[in-house]
Length: 381
Image (cartoon, rainbow, N blue to C red; front, side):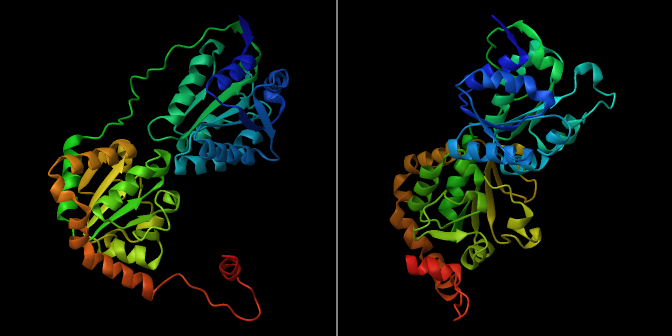
């Protein structure tokens, strides 16, 4: 079956289970838009600015637990995507961005609306491609989606020269992707998990710090079960909000609230799950959790020890690691891991946290002139 590069692109996107893409047309991608208009399965959302297309793809990925897709034209259309790509890269959101480019014969000649967008986006993408051979288009697209959604997710960028999307070739179904140099480690080291169990057993003032990795790995049940099982209070980064029930007594609030900050400052064990410890979280590194032994669970080995020195690093999927810890706690000397044992050991710590919550709660002062939003929400509640 002979298809153009544009038709192959649409066929491959649909094969990845994507039903919606976000974009803004232009001359370099007009053939792709022509192919889009001749099919009904893949929905296109027209944005008003290319940056909006990437942010919308980002939101689609978060909401659908899928990969978001953006399509824009060359030159200024491509450069307008950079802010959205950098945002997705920081938050580990899987998106694939397709941009138009001048024909391959004109690359490097300062042609109209030619920009080295591959070079520009290299620092803020998980990987990027410039397609120079239409016969490699199917494998590149399949690789891009595989890279975007696997391991630590992130944005992958594909630059499409205008002649590539117009060439007709015999379409062949791509083979299963296997990249020798890219093998994400999902399974945590059992010896390291045993160390975590020992640290939990010894701790008197433990805290769980939930980050965006908990959301991405959908480890909600596991982190909640571990916290309840060992009576460990939980805080979360901004990206980790929703990982633990906000109404539960063990919830400290988002990191930044008084009780969460004080708990981090005084804990003797911190179990950091899917947290990259950026400067907004740590502040002065030397004063961050100065009394704690730190466990860091992350699928990305480069995130461990990057900003904070940790005593127990665990490379692997957050969900798998938490499951492993729970299984070890349930299997090894179960009498030592009864919730009532931890309640006794942690009671003084939990009482201190409750005092911080009661003496310095989140509050506001309502005057008689300006109605504050907190007042409105409180009255509605």
